[in-house]
Image (cartoon, rainbow, N blue to C red; front, side, top):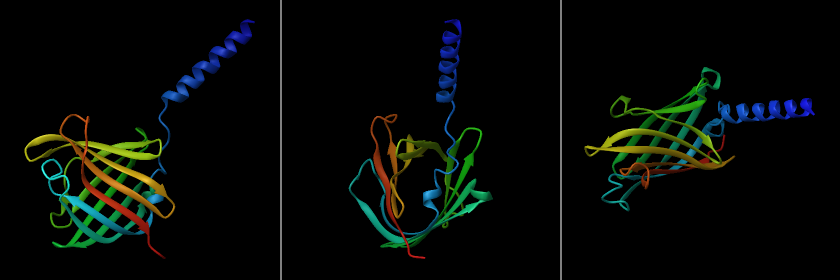
Length: 179
């Protein structure tokens, strides 16, 4: 009986430790590798004008760096205001088991702000940061969802109420380009 109780306790402790250990998400962004067609909506002021979007279309190319522990994403799109280019550097932290997303606009030539950081939970990947929009402190959430072999979506949303509600600032629908 003592051995049975001891075995049950060891099993309970082992499953508790396993549940507390974050999953290894090193390959969570592998779906994003390759070349994509993208259709983009950008919302200049998601709080005051949530329906006023600028539409762009273009390509996204994502390749692995450092053996897949980082990904480099190049974005080129055209819209009513001309040509736009951006670069995203995704870095995987194996200790925290989280990804960071660092974005730079070619027109500025530097990373915009603090990276968003997070991980996959369920069917979506959510990365978060804090930023300033029109002088107000906001939360930023980047979400990859609807992930399929030949398509996915990316949405960046802002919250000015501590995450109780979110306003769409950027939305991209991506479909895999032919080889």
